[in-house]
Length: 197
Image (cartoon, rainbow, N blue to C red; front, side, top):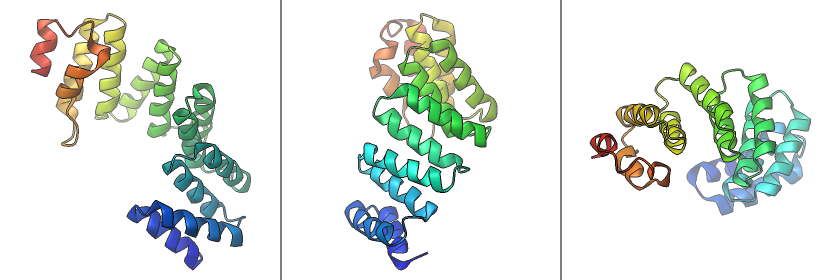
């Protein structure tokens, strides 16, 4: 790899996105057929919120190497951020077709399905995530939200309690659930208060 590419990656990893963008632009101009460079350039563009441009670069990377599941996954993430949920789902499906148990793609597919109000499909995807990775607390939390919104109090509280039990140090689902509008319909219940207080 070129020195420009190495500098671009270092700057990106260090959080200096402006410098990383400059390095990536130069590296890309000198080596536009390097699929790894193009892919990581697209990731940087997505990180700075330039999702349309990132999608273009992901498409270039796919043309160069169509067998990399993470390219489709990250392209799907850009579509998800742009609220283009159907397209995002299509990209996640492509990622999953290459890497069957791609947890991130399955999870984000569930998020997109939820946004489209395709709740039964979303639940199936979240459950698939949990089958492969039982400790995925955010999947549990999202299921709790879905079930609360659909008046299935018992299943909502079950998933919320598990999410709280599984959460990491950087997560506070008790606090989040206390504020989250998804729980408005059950927040008054003593069983809910017992879990979050």
